[in-house]
Image (cartoon, rainbow, N blue to C red):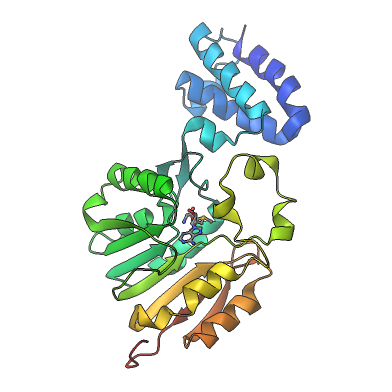
Length: 283
Ligand SMILES: C[S@@+](CC[C@H](N)C(=O)[O-])C[C@H]1O[C@@H](n2cnc3c(N)ncnc32)[C@H](O)[C@@H]1O
């Protein structure tokens, strides 16, 4: 079978399940993964015979995709901010949306960060890889996620500067940080049930929703935050697009200043940031 023949056959099976445009894009990624070809190599390979081992591997990936397994889990890795992160069923697949938070964090210097709910480690590992003089702590309630994050820290050469701790938000933690970042679970109970099967069947529920109105993780993270921020230190959290006013209110109630809602390139609120006033002691 030729490469183009395989693409047409596989599209007949996958397009009815995930739509023709997504199927076409993902099938090319599957073929590249199965063959090891670059995009350019695949582009000129249409009329050539697909090698049997690559065809078997690609067919197996299509079967998994038909069961709505996300491509990131099928590949075992996914790109974030220009680096590839290992992902498993224990971790949220890093989203492009979260790059907004990373860009905002990088806009000012920092020396010691904490990433609450680190998952794959995408945020903490990226920030330390981008700032070789900084150090950090990454926490998660999931020991399995922390093991993946530790792998990713090794993979990107920041393991010597990033410590890991299993914790329920701040419980049992101490220390003082000039940057607190978090992409916590924020989908409400009601919205969670309407999400795509790739998410509800395959990604950890606890990474996506804290239940209820979706705000309880922000409450837990923000209520004691001045005890953990250095004077002048910043906190940035990712939010759902309708959560800006509520989360900004929690920042102000916690005693943070300079509270700003940041939109992504599509104009949707994505991040809230705030700062502990300089010269004020925490607690
Ligand atoms: C939305 S995911 C974010 C993962 C990663 N930071 C990212 O942006 O791709 C939320 C993470 O918070 C963790 N989490 C959920 N509840 C927690 C809790 N009570 N304490 C600490 N971490 C928690 C989940 O295990 C999950 O890894």
